[in-house]
Amino acid sequence: MRDRLLVATRKGLFTLSAQSGWSLSPPEFVGEPVSMVLTDPRDGTLYAALNLGHFGVKLWRRRAGEADWSECAVPVYPPQPESLPEAEPGNPPVAPWSLQQLWSLEAGGADQPGRLWAGTIPGGLFCSDDGGDSWSLNRPLWDRPERLGWFGGGYDYPGIHSVCVDPRDSRHVTVAVSCGGVWQSRDDGASWTCTSTGMHADYMPPERRDDPNIQDPHRLAQCVGQPDALWVQHHNGIFRSSDGGALWQDVVAPTSSFGFAVAVHPHEPDTAWFVPAVKDECRIPVGGRFIVHRTRDGGQSFDALDAGLPPPPVYDLVYRHGLAVDDTGQRLAMGSTTGGLWLSENGGDQWQCLSTHLPPVYAVRFG
Image 1 (cartoon, helix red, strand yellow):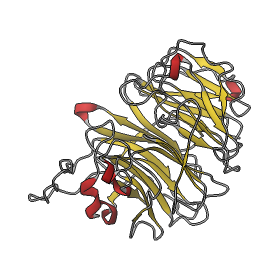
Image 2 (cartoon, one colour; image 1 turned 180 degrees about the vertical axis):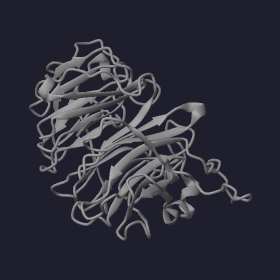
Image 3 (cartoon, one colour; image 1 turned 90 degrees about the vertical axis):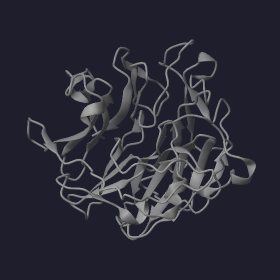
């Protein structure tokens, strides 16, 4: 069980631990937007990505046992060609070759010391093999002609927000793009295949509804114990796959199938959690009731969990990375756009409020 919780917010990085009774520590990077945080499970190194607007994206690292942070390299795009292919009719403008945000950060496999993967806006996947000292753009994915059809889902440009490394084979990497579908590589990023079959995009014209390249997965999660089990919270619903993403099945939740966050039990592939909301222009809890959906049977039924959560009316929204489960599958954490932070020690049956006055929460992670 991981006894430390990292909370990345619009105004700094907060740390809580079980030993301190889950009390908040003073923030680090106080006043600065922390878009992503990662504890590398292989060596304990902590990484924090900051989005400083005019001052750009920064990445900081603190090695295990050290007290101070040190700045490391950030992903840098190659020089943009003077002549870029024009977008086809009906497609969005071509994204610029410049880093807008570091949206996802994941460690490589146990057999890849120093390997990090970073997903960015505008849709680039970067790799580091030296713990963040240097980065390289994965050109096989970036150069796919289908990328010209990707477009922003909430941001102006597309972004890679989810990266899953198969614990059985570190060369097998799955990423989710908003809006660009799910892509997989089985050769350490040398080649890629779009694997979004079964998803549907009701925001597109009927003839493009099933196009795998324009799907909007809001978040992708993988069952660590059974990696062929994948769950996606999508703009148009919940989808699950039991065959490694070859085919996705639509799952209907009773309150709402719209939301941003999903967490999957690390050992039980049919158990997953979601935070439902009213979609599109509203993006608030349905009927002002703030709940967490849990399924234990692969989406055939759902529990609506709200014990310990604030009573209605509530207007909290949980971002893509605002819901996390630890490696036992029992401890969950959830942070909201209005600064609420909750913890459950029993799979979501009961929630404990840790704070109601944090800055907007971008990501929560156990480490």
